[in-house]
Image 1 (spheres, helix red, strand yellow):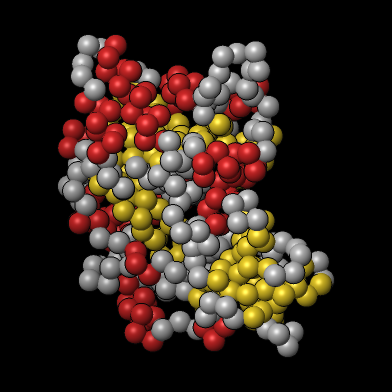
Image 2: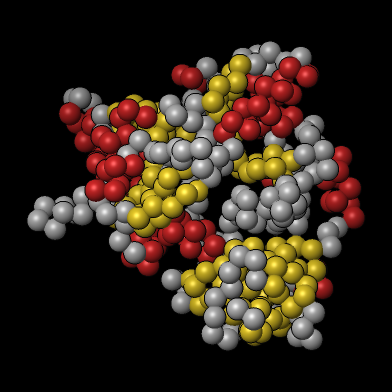
Length: 387
């Protein structure tokens, strides 16, 4: 089956990006280097093409009720222009996917939009329509993934850059800089509609890096206009002071430093079945709401977990990678690394792993098997960085 491609795939190739398959998509993994891109986000700003992420629109009289029953957080708590992080769980409380649910601004008739992970958009659409029909609810469900390009503008300078872009649009239209003020005032997990580089877009103050930033949902056919308003072209002869374009490699190192979960790696219903309490995202579970898996999670919450996700820092040389065994100091396997990297910010090898609670306290000595060699390591509190 051919890989799906983001709308700017050829533009990224011309910029010198290297590519990788991810979730059935052919996506840029790096443009210059992972370290360069990572540093740009931590120190100034970077822009990611994350058009591989899905978008599912839910509307109609029972849109809220349907989404409430299929996500762990409290959708009814969202006012127009607000969003929340949530889990999708099965009857046993096992995480199927994680998502951000948006209640769109009032002009969009209170429509809900949620973002499944890469390659999960068709699965999410089927899940919502299947349960809608089973429960006899009145809601329309639409897979909007290929209606939108999605860009993540992330870093300490992201607010100023976006405010400048929308203020320029306002000035050209003879309006005030009210749109720039809207950017500056947009709260974390807020979403609004703005013209970005003249393109009507949804702008959310969300991200996956630990830095301040925004995710822009842009009409698929206008992707190039918005991307070019920010990203540098890579042309050494051009007067180009644009934002560093970033690939999935830097996105991974950034999110590991923050202890953020990656679907299919830090949880997977088949290969790494975990519930939200094990995965450290119990804050997304609202047991006073009705959702699929609620009863199972109520029991877990009452009884506690046997294992939990923890951070690991290697003391010896080496890098903890996905699939590497974690042992106690006697050599007994007690867990497996789910994600790992050499942290560009900390300049330390770090990773995530599920360990028995007896080994989860920060500073506990463990070992990681790196290419057959036992490496000294210690557990760490997540996130690795305090942002």
